[in-house]
Amino acid sequence: MDTQPPTNDDLKTKILSRIESKALYPRSRLSFKSWEFLVWCLWLFTVLVGALAVAVSCFVLIQHTYSIYEVTHRSSLAFFMETLPLLWFLVFLAMVIFAVYNLRHTKNGYRYPLWLIFGSSMILSLAGGALLHLAGTGFILDKQIGLLTSYYESQEKREQKIWQQPAQGRLLGRLQTLDSEDGGLTVTFTDYASVIWLTDISELDNEEILLLGSGLKVRLLGEVINIAPPHFHACAALPWLHETVATRLELNNSRQLIISKQNRYLGPPEGQTLIDSPCARKFSQLRFESRQ
Amino acid sequence: MNQQNQGVKDEDLVSQTLAEPSSFGFIIERYEAKLRRYISRLGVKNPEDAADVLQEIFIKAYVNLNSFDTSMSFSSWIYRIAHNEAISWYRKQSVRPEGHLIIEGDEVLSLLSSKQEGAELQFDHQINATELNKALTTLEPKYMQVLLLRYFEEKEYSEISDILRIPVGSVGTLIARGKKQLQTVLNRDNLRI
Image (cartoon, rainbow over all chains, first blue to last red):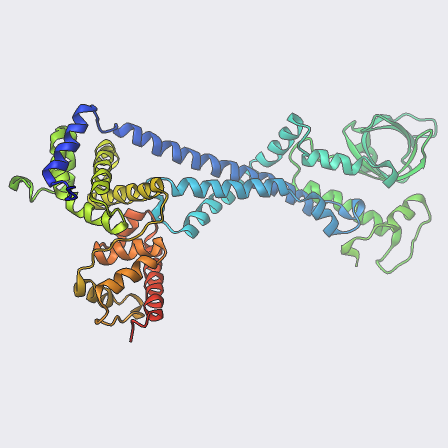
C-alpha cells in the first residue's frame, strides 16, 4: 500500500475542489464581530450584577455599623454572623468568576494574566458597586427583591423580625391613639402583628413623643407589663429607617439616643442605677461597648 | 509555489482570497509543509491521518478567514487552528497526545542549550536525538507543546502565546518548567553530565 503523503498539489486540489463542491464561503466578518460583541456584553452584564451585589452589601454593612446590636443580640459577633449579606457576597464572587471567564473568551482575552483580568473585573465591580450604593441603588434593590419574593430576606424584613419581639421588649408599629385618660401618659400602639398595646410613654422624651405622634412607623424599646390585655412600658422610641435611604446621621442618632438614655439612667459606666424604674432595669441589662 | 506570490505577505494573500477564493491555493502551498510537520510532531503520525487533519485545518482556516485580523500574525493564527485540530483529532481517537518528534539532530540540541532561558539546562551534546525524542514524549502535553513550538517550530513567545491562547508570561513559565522536567527525565536516564 502506498503510504507516501499526498503531494502539495494533491492536497491543494482536494481542498479547493471541496470548497467548490460544498459551496463553502468564509463566514461574514459581522458574525465574528457579533459574537465578540455578545461576549463583551456578557462580561459587562456580570460586572454590573457584581456591582449591584456590592451596592447591596455596602448598604447592609453600613446599616450594621450603626445598628443597636447591643439591644438585639448577645454580642457583636453573633449579630454580624446572623446578618452578614452572605448571599450577596456569593453573588459578587460568582459574577467576578463569570466576568473573568467572559473576558478570557474575548478575542484577545488570553493575552492578559489571570490576576490582571481577575483584579480588573473585581475592581470594576467594587467601584461600580460603591457608586451605585451612593446613588441609593443598594437600598432600593434590597427592598424591592424583598417585596417581590418571600424567599429573600431583605434588610427591612430582617429588621422587622428583630424589632417585632415583644418578649424581648421590642415592638415595631405605629401609634393608634394619642388621646388617653391619664394626661397623655398612656397611648395605644399597634405592632407589626396587629396587636394593640396599651403603652406607657411616661419615660419617653418630648422628641420621642413627637416621633410617636407623627404617625410614622417606629421602633419601641421597653418592657412588657402584661400580655393579656397587652400592656407595654416604652423606654425609647426610634424611627423606622427603612422607608427611604437612611443617612448616616439618622442611623447614628438612633444609636446615640439609646446610649444617652442609658447614661441618664445608669450614670457613669462604673456607676450604679440612678433611678429605679422599668426603664432603668431595661437599660441596666444592655451592655454598650462605648461605655466599657 | 507561484513565483509571483513568493514575496507577497500573508495578510495580502488573505485579502486576495476573500476577493477571489482560488487564491487560497497560495496559502495552502505556503503552509502545507510547515503544518504537516507541526501536526506530525504533535503526534498525528499516519500520513493519511495527517492529510485528513490538514484538510480540516485548511477548510477551517478558509471558512473562518474573516476572523483573522492583524493583531496577530497569520502564521500564529493558522498554527492555532492546526493545534486545535490536532488536539481534536487526539480526542476523537481517545488517545493521549504522543509526540512524534522529527529531531534534526545536533541542530535542535544546540538550540535547546543556547536559548539559556533560566540557564538551568546545559545539555550534553552527546545526547543523541533518539533519547531526546523519547524524553520529550514523556513530558506533560502542555510542556511538550511549548517546547515544541519554541525549539522545533522556532516561534517567539508572543507567537506561542497567540497559538496556545495563553499569556506571554505563562509561555515563559511553561518553557522553564518544561525544560526542568526534561532535565529531570534526562538525569533519571543518566543522560546528562
